[in-house]
Structure formats: structure tokens, C-alpha cells
Image (cartoon, rainbow, N blue to C red; front, side):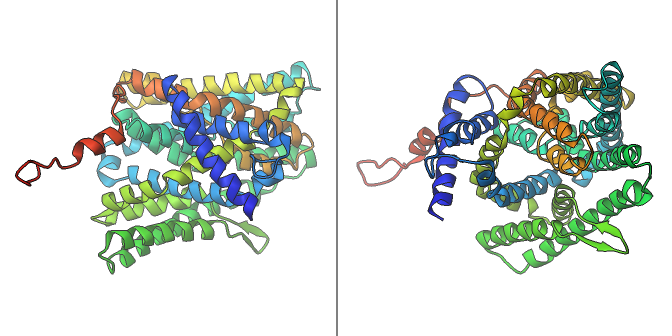
Length: 434
């Protein structure tokens, strides 16, 4: 127990300390937290073996998975705030078209590149693995994107479209992966399962939206019984944690696997709650303040999970470089083409694709399923390598794109400490306060 508290405290303080030099270098705080986790992970300070000083093993990092799941729940809940009815009326069709098109184009581009690589050298990667990686390429990590938007208070049409597209990307990626994985499995076994390819992903999406909608509705109903701001905040936090827990339940009915998507469920809960509760804006802001340390821990732990061991595997590096190049091209041109087709303004067309590059938890979750393939280890290692690159580079690229689009204002030199001192009342000689 003492080691757990030591790891948590060192992770939190290490992330904050790393954010200082990162700010001077113009890097987002997310990058600093990831680097702090990398330094504290089992490939750097953790390798020394001193209990409490970082994460000594990958198994020890996995023990903190509960924190990562909770943080993802709050992140998805916050993204649901972007789906307010007034915004959906103005750009709802664009979100759907861009969200689906960019994911499908990315999958097609990566599939074409990796299948071509297979035929040039079948020993590098198998055809089922190539098809599966193409589907995994569609997934985008919402956490890093949201943190960059929050840190720099980005606002504008690109930011709103970005957060909406990232939110529905989980559903689109789930369908693409299920279909591609089903085809890959059929190529290896010679049998196609319609249930796993079509039925199960649709059921998962529908049930996730239903569960999330019910959670958001009941949160609103219960919130009306409390008038204290702190109690309403506590109730909201409790409901998000409840939603995260329910979304992790899995069972089978008649041979059909039933599960939920954590991101979709919590996102829908936030969407319903924010559209039916008049005081949702205030509650969301208070919840965001409470989750700030949780988000730091999430990214530090994510950094500690990055596997530097893949850098010693030449074949993985080669396939990984091809994967990263063509996934980046697919995201950029997919977003550009779909934005052009829906009449988006030039600054959105030119910059949306770059902001969709970060990739992490969702993609890694898909690799756990893909490990049943004969070339499953190659799939996981390639995704681990890409996550290492995208998580360290992606937030900085997102920041640059939002600045270029004019949706991040230049950073000032203000300090919360200085501002608080300036706000203190000044006593006059007469005893009055100014």
C-alpha cells in the first residue's frame, strides 16, 4: 500500500515538475506528463528497482488501470458537452460525414500500404495483420486532444468540429475494426462469423448509447434534489464513476457477446445531461476542476505504459514507420476531402487532419483482441510503436494547428499566484478596505 501512495505522489509531482520546462519550450502540458511517465516507467528510473521510485515493472503500471479508466470516463463525459443541440443544428451533418469519411479513408489508405508491403515481402507482415492494422488506424485518442484544447482555451469552429469528430470516432472505429477483424479471422480459419462482424458491434454501440442516455437522465433528475454546489458536484462525480463501472460489465446472451464502450457510454451521459440540465455548464466546470489531478495521473501512467522495447525490433520499426506515414496521410487527406465536400471553411480543411493524429487507449484495446491472430504480436508491437510516436508528437502538432487556425490566443505571462495577491484587499489608514 505504501508503494502505491509513493508511486501516485511521485507521478503527480513529477508530471507537474516536467510541465515547467515544457512550457518554456512551447510544448503542451500533456507532452510533459507523458515524458514524466516515460522517465518514471520500467525502462528508465523504474528499472533501478527502488520501491516507490517510479514503476518498476509493466505489471505494476497495470495495477493503476482503475485510474486510467476513471479518467477516460470523465474525459468522455466532458466531450459530451460539445453535443449541445444548438451546435448540432448548425453542424450536425458535417460531424457525421467528416467523422465517418476520415475514418474510412484512413483505413483504406493504411490497408493499401500494408497489403502492398505484404506482397512485396510476405515475411514482414501477414495479410490478416495488415487488414487489422488498417482498421486500428482509424481510432483517435480523445484524451490528449481535449487536454490541449482545455490548456490553451481553444475556441472556434475547428475546435468544436474536432471534439465532435473525436467523440464519434470511437463508434466508427469499433465498426471498422469488428468488420476487418472478422475478415482477418475468416482468412485464417476459413469461417466467417456474421455475429462477431455485424451483430456484436452494432449491439455494443446501441447499448452504450442507451446506458449513457439513462445515466445522464437520472443524473439530472437526482441533481434537482440538491442545492449545494459541492453536493451537486459530488453527485456528478459519483454518477460518472457509476457509468464507468457499468460500462465495463460484459456477459453473453445466446452465444452473442454483450459489452459496452466506456467512451461512448460516458460521452452520451454527458450529452444528455448537458442538454436537459439548466445548470449543467456550472456543474461541468466544477467537475473539471476536481478531475485536474486525475488527468495528470492518467497521462503520467500512459507514459509509463509506453514500451521502449519495440525500438529494438527492426521489423516492427519498418512496419511501424509505414503505418505511421500512411495513417498520417489518411487522416490528413480524409479530413481534407470530407471537409471540402461538406463546405467547411479553409482553416478547418487545412488543419483538422493534423489534430486527429493522437492515438492511444482505444487502439491498444483493439490490439488485445487482435492478439488471437497468428501475427497478433506484430500488430500489438506496431501499435505500441505508433502510440509512442503519436502521443509524444501529437499534442504539439494539435497545438500548432489550432494556433494556425487562429483558435488559440497567444499565451500571456500571467501567474495565478500574482493575480491572487493583486486581488487581496488593501487597507487604508482610516481602516477601510479598498
